[in-house]
Image (cartoon, rainbow over all chains, first blue to last red; front, side, top):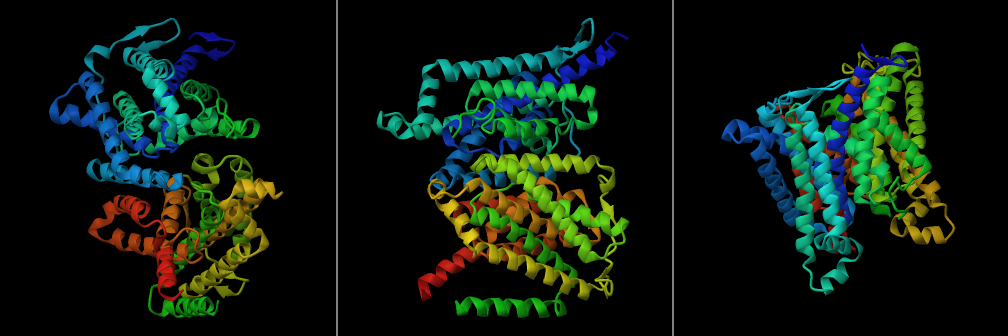
Length: 295
Length: 309
């Protein structure tokens, strides 16, 4: 067994890989939350439920309609994003002028309905989704075995996050989005359809969660509570990173995944709690979050 | 405010005679959740901060009281006091951290901290993990009142509830409570008047947590059980729903809301709709937020003002 300074390198790299995978999902989910927060100033409590919906939609697409993984990767985020658009248009917009805590409670209610519905339909034990044939192999590296599917998840997540960052920070569409974040009234006065941008942004943010769900289906068990479990961790990550920047959300997500993976190796008892503990430390040292602007 | 006093007297009479008509354990459960919701409402209704982590305090009170009753031979009132103090201490720590952030961040911070507590209780040996603490003895109140009698237990819970309710009532109507309301209405102004806003929020949070712990401690005695259900984020969501249904920021709203939700859960869990409890609760959330934001008591107050005010 390869060891270095008494550390089992196989185990260490294995957990690092698991950490990076988890981090990829944290990054996608917190990115979606940050985009929605930027424009609507609300936290979507249903983001976890949308991730769960994405995983179930991929599972249903394969088992009921024979739609394969690659097609699901395109179709499911669109479907989930559309659900998000309906939700924004018919549930969130009517109370947009009320205290933002109400829209938070509303999305919490939607999350409860979705989770309850899928628990009722499919039970709480969870189902498996087979890894697509083309990604079933793996590569043997000096210190570890790297399955193709895991490599694919990390790459896909980094590419999607990077593209989203580029789109928001460097394109004209992104400029509209950022302007809408700064001053929606002025944007409206310039003749830009702000409500449409808000709806599409919400749909996009939710669609990212749907995409994460499809990607997660083959490696985690597809179960109704997969969304709520990950969402609370993502909330802690959002508090750690602060909602100030898109790049910050991505980096914090990946970074926290790695920290979690390392904890799993060095002190497994704390692996469930380490991210929350980091949040406590950040709140003590820099309450606005690592990348946050002081409100 | 004669009318309000008459209302309170009528409700008290109702609470005293109720166990002769309804199952006392059910009523005791109702009062425990009513106290829990009132404690939560102190934060949301009077400080304007939505805590999504109050289950941590309910559960902490329950576990500490349960452990003391099983292992220390203490009388129940002491075990409850210590459970309340433990929850209050946890609340002081949480409060110190969470009042640094506002609005939705506050909700996320409290939710995450409560999840931290959930995982600790899941792994800690003394809680019994997934099985929970079962067969907690009710003991003899002050050493001579046998609480294993359901009627005795109910009246003890009623007394605990009244004490908790009185503390909340006093807090709200004290100068301290007025400052809390000022913070809720216009925080910047409260700051400019020289109030240390974060300290006020912190103290309110600690009181709220301690009372939630009191509710949890008492609930453990009633059911002779302390389990992870009480620490789960579902529980934090339920107390938000109770308060919302009853009326945020009204003193009786949480009591009414707790009554509605607990009764509904009891009714549904027996019938064939049991599987739908969470779906139905989710719908109630959505409907309340969209069309019924004042809650039952809030709407009644509005009607009262329109017709008699």
